[in-house]
Figure 1 (tube, rainbow, N blue to C red):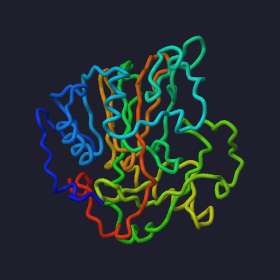
Figure 2 (figure 1 turned 60 degrees about the vertical axis):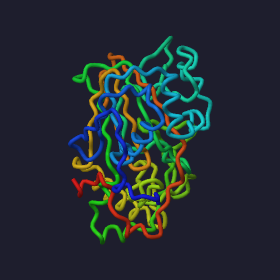
Figure 3 (figure 1 turned 180 degrees about the vertical axis):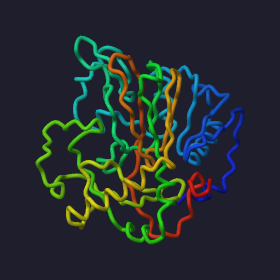
Length: 322
């Protein structure tokens, strides 16, 4: 647990303005060029980030190289290819744009019939990034380079899993404490089958890490629900029917609108969220529109439930405290 409780910290906010969103998470940071942030300002921004779960910077001019420098301030960068443990040369970005390995292009654009980036233009379902790894990523960020008009779709929705946990009853918390969810890696977040995977399997026998439903944040000390992703998931120790019922119950609770922030993208937006205590999804958008975002992330930790988790105070951005 952090030495000083997050709610008691008083970060020096330097020469920028913090404007919390009216939703359950997120704050817009105004009056700052994110490429020219000094160490002291970054430390204060980091505390603001922990307190608000997600930060939004608008009107920024951030190159791929700038993004690499930024992501390194949050921790050790990890490439998408490293996380997937497979060669990503089939993505044309490495040949077309020569992006640094720390940067992944999220796009529907094709060059010579090959996808330049990942995730296309379809719907992306609720998930936390790389929950199928033993140590999912921590800080995650997207930089908007080309964005279609908002009326063509493509909003990204972020969900505060601290608030979802804090809204549980004491009885529900007792039911979930000590339970873990195995995260298989059968389909991706666009609901496409992974190479070599099959839907005709018993999820109980599928390899994958197990993460606690109640997850204690290593920096804030507060608890959140860690659900990862609904598909290819199994609550360990239960029958398939019991597992499915509990997962349905958890996801129905967690995905209530009161826990959600919708981000409507504009060129120059930088969004940085804490993947350890959020899930997110994306609406589909018009396939004729061009959309390009740069993504980067840092190494995380293996999720855990603290021995005194049920006695921990709520996160300051909990919906119950708003």
